[in-house]
Amino acid sequence: MADHVSVPSVKDDPETQFVALHTAPDVYINAKNDTCWLPWVGTIELKPYRFEARSGQFVVGLRSPVDACLGKHRHRGPVTAVTVAGSWRYKEYQWIAHPGDYVVENPGTIHTLYISGGSEVVFTINGSIEFFDDNDQLKQTMDIFSFAKLYYDHCEKVGIQPNPGLWY
Ligand SMILES: [Fe+2]
Image (cartoon, rainbow, N blue to C red; front, side, top):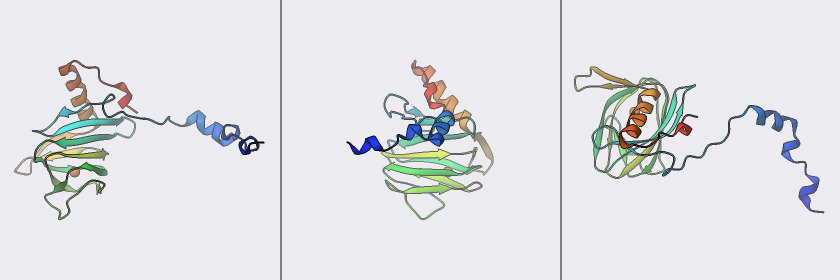
């Protein structure tokens, strides 16, 4: 008799059945077919991976074909970043993030992003981001809905359907 016959299936486990009733499904986002790059600031482009409307968390890729700067900004929620390609840094810090590096940005911190040409970073962002001008005056506040609208506006402009599957 094969070994697996004597092992109960996890589907028969009461807790597994209970969890199956209430858990959210796993999600796979295909980088080419389920989302797209869209222009943001200057040469910097965004790719949305997730809009999570209950907590306000969203996940976006960020890239630029040439060296670029994203203005000084302050976070109101925690942010994490994984570098996929190239390198990037904040003017205010000594480190330079390379592929595989992991960065945590905490609420209240203010920094100015410099990204090298050909770089790509995936950010998981909570709360809002406040952008400042050269005189440190608040210029713009953005959150999950600001970024989602950028994506939807881009889809309308280029004549493609936004993917509702990115809201999860
Ligand atoms: Fe930041």
